[in-house]
Length: 209
Length: 209
DNA sequence: GGTATTTTGTGAAAGCTTTCACAAGATCCG
DNA sequence: CGGATCTTGTGAAAGCTTTCACAAAATACC
Ligand SMILES: NC(=O)c1ccc[n+]([C@@H]2O[C@H](COP(=O)([O-])OP(=O)(O)OC[C@H]3O[C@@H](n4cnc5c(N)ncnc54)[C@H](O)[C@@H]3O)[C@@H](O)[C@H]2O)c1
Ligand SMILES: NC(=O)c1ccc[n+]([C@@H]2O[C@H](COP(=O)([O-])OP(=O)(O)OC[C@H]3O[C@@H](n4cnc5c(N)ncnc54)[C@H](O)[C@@H]3O)[C@@H](O)[C@H]2O)c1
Image (cartoon, rainbow over all chains, first blue to last red):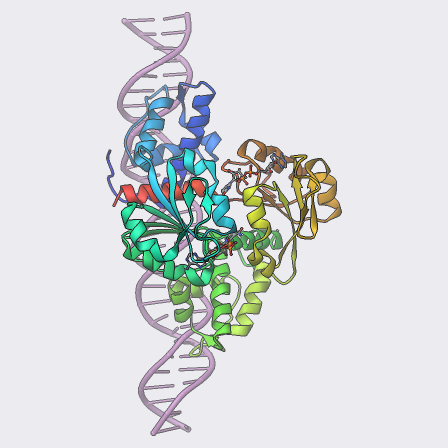
């Protein structure tokens, strides 16, 4: 798989959307798809689709389009979805339990292997096959379970300490739901899903139209 | 409030983050703050902070910085947080119930005034002061409650129909949690929080480092 | 087989966003 | 009061991303 230069983050996100559209197209029985159709489904333009794909190689045939099955395989390869990822969840609260039960993660190959919480009332609870563990065991358990991705669902005040600890335990990818700007070394991939900011962006849009 | 041209969406998001940093600074007793300090807390650069603020006016004093209290007021005005927003939640499932109890929304002035679900087993349930209502009543109730923002937390297959219906009922802002590309008229502000795409972006990052 | 049609892959152009860099204004302090 | 210091606001430059536009390659059809 070619990885010529650095890939824009926006391209990576669109690849994920293309994959979803392609799977729908496949379910609908389509064997090939043009950049135009893919753009239509993905809410972008055909030039964007072709440019995005061209970062990774050349997957289409002129006058014909892209073979659906093969392109699905290629994008899964590119995104690293060809194996399952070992995930841990820190914070067994409301958002944590919603995420724990989220089948889409499972379906896409993200398997939650451990759940941690600092609340003694929660530690020991059975969560669908797993037991909620004390956050004191976190570092050891992350290493033993060879956890690759950690989801942070603890209060904002606790989030930075959790990041520091999981990074020290060797984790290199973190998805954060706490409304806080977290710091991590360059080598760690950190994404924050900030729902209040999304709401405020809507408020601004309403306020200015 | 000046709104000279069209404001980049990235600027709007940062405004929301600046507001959070400013509130922390205020809680810490600071009366003024420089673009440098604000940048440090917000994870950006001082030039970015100044450029962002300059879209909306001129709030600082040279040699001194920005008065914290006043800048908080100005940003709240800009984002439209000077009043409470009437919000409805469609889909009383796992993510819906997590969001319903999320205090941060309440604290920032987003008040959930109605909850709808299509499942007869859920309709009629008491949810902290509210009753889950049938989605058949949705259009009427949205109009009567003068709902401004709708949060969509239904399965992906149902999401487009819900958007179409709430838009027809006059709603002009939607926050969507379903992993689907939704279509809405230009005049409607629509944001999608797509957690699987976030995870896949992390997978890609791990795969390429 | 040959011509019209389709659709990719990609340089170049256009459009956006971020960063630079500095004049101008305000403070501080002796 | 006056010189040294600080920090904003902002044009201009740099850097990124998207869109354009077209040659090249493949198909479709007669
Ligand atoms: N509820 C939502 O819908 C929602 C939405 C967006 C973001 N968030 C954010 O997600 C985070 C969690 O929210 P919530 O509503 O689930 O809160 P919650 O209080 O229901 O759950 C937080 C959990 O984290 C645990 N915890 C606290 N400190 C910990 C630590 N150091 N290590 C391990 N566990 C720890 C608590 O014991 C608790 O079980 C918050 O930062 C919140 O702002 C929540
Ligand atoms: N669980 C999560 O953590 C999570 C995370 C991210 C995104 N999502 C997305 O959020 C959506 C909801 O997920 P969930 O896990 O809460 O599912 P869920 O099944 O627990 O809840 C969905 C609810 O929507 C209701 N519903 C279905 N069709 C409806 C309609 N037309 N009108 C009104 N209500 C309707 C159902 O009765 C159910 O109560 C899905 O699209 C899912 O992909 C969930």
